[in-house]
Length: 178
Image (cartoon, rainbow, N blue to C red; front, side, top):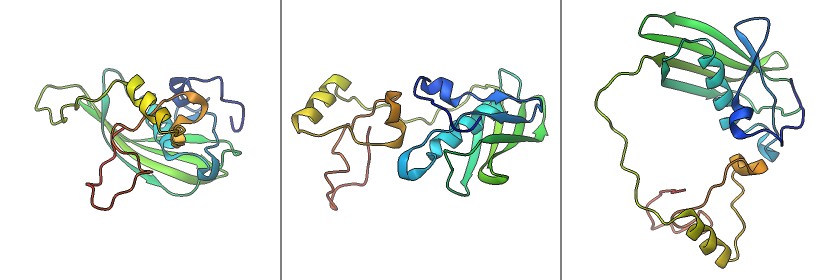
């Protein structure tokens, strides 16, 4: 697919991949994230989507390891090559490479497994101010939205919950809450 206007796409649409005649190769548009080239989350989301295309529902992503090998070129076509490493009734493993100009720019190993019950280790979400209050506070300080790569195109809105990274304090615990 390569370069084309993606401003009309929702985030979900941008992360979807398009099948090719080869059931192990998927393509999708690139998007420029300024000096970053292609944002790492763009690679990650599309690679995971390509992996999902090769496993049967209701398997879910269980584990993944991602490697950013070179800067992505938003002007070059982007292909995701999926290799089946392991298949079983309860879980599958895929190797997924994002290729541009014949070279791997990103590589992921992902495992997918059937849902199961078990211990939950997710931290409880803290109570935070409503988004509207965070926006008013930022605007009251005269600050623009922080230019995170993923907020480009207005698909995602992010606000700092605590002090922003603009307010560096070396004595403060190194946390970033958005």
